[in-house]
Length: 98
Image (spheres, helix red, strand yellow):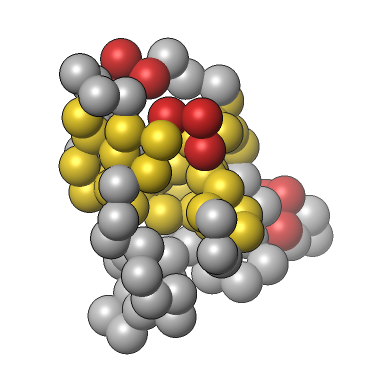
């Protein structure tokens, strides 16, 4: 998810009703081959309860994330990545993820 998120960043994630999810939101999901992922929603199909993921990376590290995934693999919506959790000696404002 670089440059939005970097290795070692901590996140705030909330359970989020599927019907409120929209493309562009950052989510925490489990992938059948890649395990736990933080990715951006590319598409959401509310009728068939499924979604597709995309990455902010210009060179994706995880390939094959463009297939439709069932709602059951979506764990939460990432709402912030407070830099102050990562570096308590230099507190800062949370980075809002929209």
